[in-house]
Structure formats: structure tokens, C-alpha cells
Image 1 (cartoon, rainbow, N blue to C red):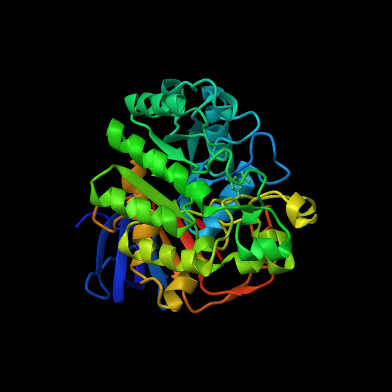
Image 2: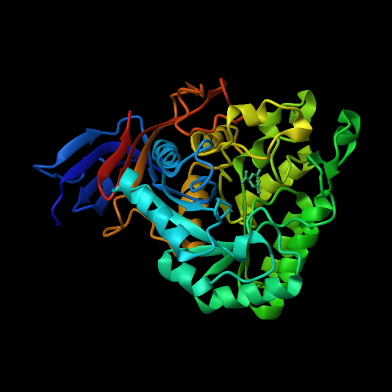
Length: 424
Ligand code: DOR
């Protein structure tokens, strides 16, 4: 047997008690508890803890460069480490925008300085210069500098011809396009889901058709070009139905949603709580049910946080004036576990939705608990609830509806390459 320097004893892996044997930063073996001796190894007691692969978040906003008062790469990565995320895909809506190699390199350098052993930033380059939708960004340069995908992020590309060329150009460099699906006109200026609740609250709404129209456009393009498009933060039933049909026909689209769309609906806006102002907006109960089903069946491939930290003073304004976004890295695993506890998801879905499928879509490394895989893993206490106070959240962004609420399940330790990057 290969050299073993770390042994995690008695940890629960998909309802089995196991020992995880680690050597030289890699998984040596995941064995039945007590089945293998490993003399000389450092032993960590995993009793009562759940083993998970280190998670990947394919959609975060780290705000650096340019908006470090909201978050910086170091604070974002400390929230990632504590939240169980070993890789985070950082969106390009920084200032300046990540549309050239110097910004990508800066992000990677800052990350390496703050966390030389990970978590790893995987930058997502801009699809168009300055996210302006007018001129393509240099996909080759961005790929060579370390971008793992391209996206115009919160600013949909209006010009469909340009968007088509961008998808083709990105594919030339092996990069996938992540598209924020929102019609540029329908619902413009809206601040919540359009419907009875928005009418009652007197807030301008964004109809679900705004998202679904763009999803339909992307499906048609992906089919015509036979090129992959990844659909960002899907929020409604119409989109789910379109994606399901596209997948049945073998069209190469993939999709993500966020824990907040699986847990909460538009009624949460009822008291004008700006912590639930997010784009796309929280939808109806029916949309929540459609998304849960889609996540279970794989119609929606993965979960992401859309971690969007904002400063407290920015959210302490009227609902209509507040910026969009929920800070997500600290609480994502707890919120996912809430869905497991309520029977909406199986514990085994966590690894698929937050790691393995994400790695497949974006070509990233992942720990599948097989010999030789990177020893990137999380020890999670499913029975330990915690209160998400401002102090407990490691992100600078305290803008979450969970603030000061109790959430279930706590990351106790996080290892990357066999070394602890976080423990409590
Ligand atoms: O809620 C959101 N916040 N949605 C987006 O698309 C952008 C993000 C941000 O950057 O704050």
C-alpha cells in the first residue's frame, strides 16, 4: 500500500462508516472503518462527522479588484475555506472588469498570497470588453492567463449575433460560456418577481418570461452551433421545462441554481427585507417546487451560491434602491443540508451537485474518493446547528436572510491536498 501520513477515522461516507487514508496529498484509500492499519500516520477522529469532497462553487463575486469594501479575495477565500469550498469560480464584474490577462493574473496572485495552499480561485473571464456587449474580449489571452470559462455575468449580451460569435470564439479555446439569462428589455428596472405579490407591495416586477426567453434563445443557439452553453442561476419553472426538453433532445446545455431559489419564495419580500433582493428574484412557491424536482433529477446540473457580498450601508435603504445579491459562501452547505433534512435532497446529492458534476462541466479537478484523487475533503457535523451572526460569517458580506438565524450543520475541518486549510 502507498505511504499513509493522515488517517481520518470513523467518518460517515454515504451512510457507511469509513476510514480515509491519505498520503502525499492524495487519497490512498477509502476503506471500511477499522479494516486497514496505518501505523505512523497522524490520526484524526471523524466520529459523528460526515465526509464530503471539497466543494466547488461555480458562481461567486469576489469584488476584487475595485470593490474591496464589499469583499476582497482574501476574505472571500476565508469564507470559502470555512464554507467547505476548495475552488470558487470568480465572476468578471470587478472594477476593472476581468477582460484581460492582467486582471486575471492579479486575482490569481492575490489568491496565492492569501491562501497559498488553497482554496483556489478559478477566474471567469468577461465575454465582452468591459461587459459592454459591443466587442469580444480576448478569449485566448484569458484562457492562457487561467480563466476557466467566460461570461458576461449580470449584463446579458443584447446583440445575438455577437453572442453567437462569442460562444464560437470561446469554444476555440476550450472555454464554456456561462450565460446570465435575462431579456434586456422585459422587466427592466424590476426589483422582484412580477405577480400578485409585487402588485400588492407596489414594487416593479420582473416576469419569469424575461429569464425563460433568454434560456430559449440559448438553447436554440446551442443546438444550432452544437456548442455548450451553461445557464446561470435558473429561477423558474418555465426555464426548467425548456432545459428538460433541450436535454431530452441532446442539446449541450447545462444549468445551475442556488440554495435560495430552492428554499424561499417571493413572499419573503413581504416586509421589504432587502436581504432577499437578488437577481434573478425569488419566484413563486410553484417555481421553488419545479426547481427542487429539477435538481433531484439532474435537469438542473449543479448548485452554486451566486455569492454576492454587499456592504451593510448599501442594503440599509429602501427595497427598490438596494443592490441585488445574497452573501452565500458561509451558509451554502448548511442551507443545502436543510434540504437534506427536510427530505428534498439525499445526502449523497451534495457531492454530485456541489462538486462532481461541476468539475465535469468546467473541467476542474475533484475528489471522487478514489485512490490517487486529490485529498480535498470536508468534515461536516450534521448535528451541530449554529447561529449565522455577523461575527460567525467569514465573508465581509453579511447580507444574507440567514443573518442571526440558526442554520443546521457545521464545517468542522477542510483539507486540500491533505492539509487543513480550515478547522474549528
Ligand atoms: O444578485 C445578483 N448579484 N445577481 C447578479 O447577477 C449580480 C450579483 C452581483 O454582482 O451583485
